[in-house]
Length: 92
Length: 335
Ligand SMILES: [Fe+2]
Ligand SMILES: [Fe+2]
Ligand SMILES: [Fe+2]
Image: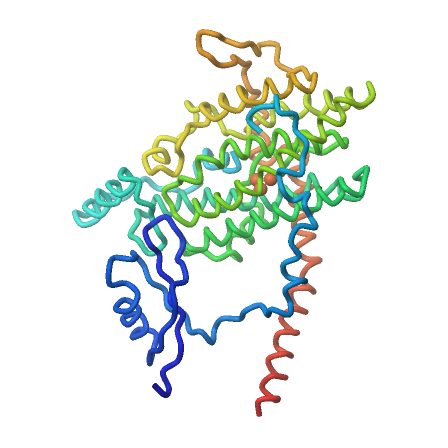
């Protein structure tokens, strides 16, 4: 499939929820990618909306950058559980 | 709430033009979806009025998050401990994030962030009246977290079920983050409440100044809220201003008592028949004054926002120049 670029496919399962990544496919152009995505990923009413995005348009974080990007729990004051609220205080 | 300005009838807004048969049919189908709790997504057909109302509501909400950073920003360099400073910075950073989530949600309706931001800087857009009050003491920071963010949560929780998908999803993210804002505020108030007599006085003074402005956050009384009925029908709103205000008062009065504070309202009293607290009349004259631009800090807030925008210009330009340089470098490497 020379010249058929890779597209990532996102489907919105139903109105109200965000599009979710479901996989990818090759297609000659975006319109055909959409039609192919419908046939490949949406044969059983899996969604109400499809997005296709050229994979080349995606910039991803690198595993080497893991520490700088995703330092996990050291700022625990960003979480509600960090704060001492007496148990008799309601609606908080 | 953050969108109290919706109750100002916009200048030059004309009554809806008569509808064609096709439009009437589309609108009936649209309302059926709303009634069946099917969310509206950006590419779905929607009435012009629904789109307009949402753009105004979401952008006012976004502006409020952005302007809302200023009163708290006043205390970053004066926070009493490193822990408190880190917490305050984290909270303010969250508010910037909330503004950005909301501008993005608003852009799905066909406006650009630039347009919205220009309206704010030109003084043409509204934001919540609450951010036009000064933060005079450290106790104000506790009261803001506990009551201002508390009132915001009361309003935002039902917005998670707003009929417009992108707005509802932004609210889900925001509500998750707000919980820490409210708790750090109450914890700060507790520390002062358990402190010296002077600290307790400071806390009471802050409550006295903030109480009525906080109740104004829910917007004018229902009888003066001209857009409420339509917004409820469209399920943009799930509760009226007065309903939310009552829920809020019922929730926070016991919390205030726990802090040993007195609510500055002689009419506040538990009403066992209603199962709610009765409370006095909110000073609505003050509310309308502040929302129309004449509160204690309106001018200062707008000046600060404009200055931040101007002083940040070189950063925006430098980022663009850097992107351009990197693009050229990659091109020449590829060549
Ligand atoms: Fe907020
Ligand atoms: Fe916020
Ligand atoms: Fe907040």
